[in-house]
Image 1 (tube, rainbow, N blue to C red):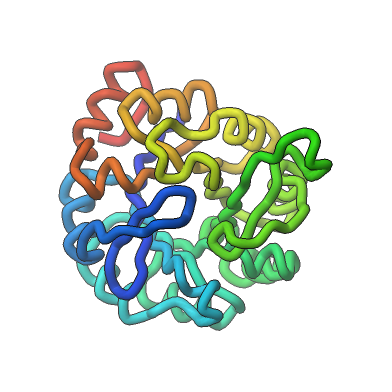
Image 2 (cartoon, rainbow, N blue to C red):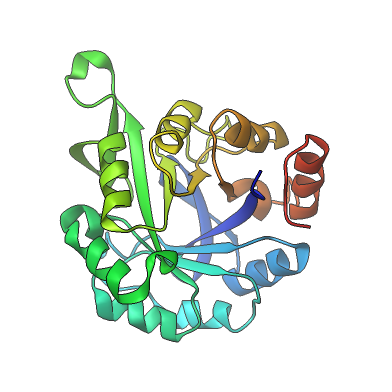
Length: 256
C-alpha cells in the first residue's frame, strides 16, 4: 500500500487563513505563515494554499502571500486560485512552489490542462474539482461540477470530467464536495470513491473532516490517496501527529 499523505489546507483571503461552511460564512482562522510553519514542524506531508477569492475577484494569485509561505517551509507546497495561463504557473514555480492547482480555468478551457502538463510535467499539475450532489428530480447530473468557489453550476457530470482531466495530463485530482465542506460531518465518500475508482491518478479527499474516523473512512471507503483538511487543524481540534498516530494504529501506511 502506498503511503497516505496528510495535507493541511490554507484557504487564504485578504492575507489571512479563513474557513467557512460550504464555501460561505468565512471566519478568520490564523496567519498563513504561522500556520504553514506549524504544520511543517508537526510533520504534515504537504501543504495546500488556495487563494479562494482570486477567481471570484477576477485576478491572479497574490504572489506576495505565496512567497512568504514558500520561504518558511520545507515540505511540498501546492498553490491554487486565480491561475489562468502558463505564465501564472511559471511565476509560482519560480517562487519555489512544487505543484499548482487549477480549477475554473481548466473547466473554461480544458486544453489548458494539456498545455500545462506538456510544459511543466504531470507531477506539477493538480486539477481541483469542486462538486455537489443534485436530487434525481432536478434532471441535472447526480454529481455535478461547480466553479468560482462553488458559486456557479456548470451542468457537467463530475466523473466524466475527472476522466477527461486524467486523459489531458493532470497528475492528481483535488476533489472537494461543496455539500460537506466545513460541516465536519465527514467527507463525501460516495463522490470520493466513485472518482478514485474511475481514474488511475491519485485523488485527494477534501471537504468535511471533523474527527479522526473521517480521515480513515476517506482512505478505506473513499479510496483516497491523500486526505486534505482545514478546520480540524486550524482550530487545533486535531494535530498532525495525532492524525498520523491514529491512522498508523488503524493499519494505514503513512509517512513518519
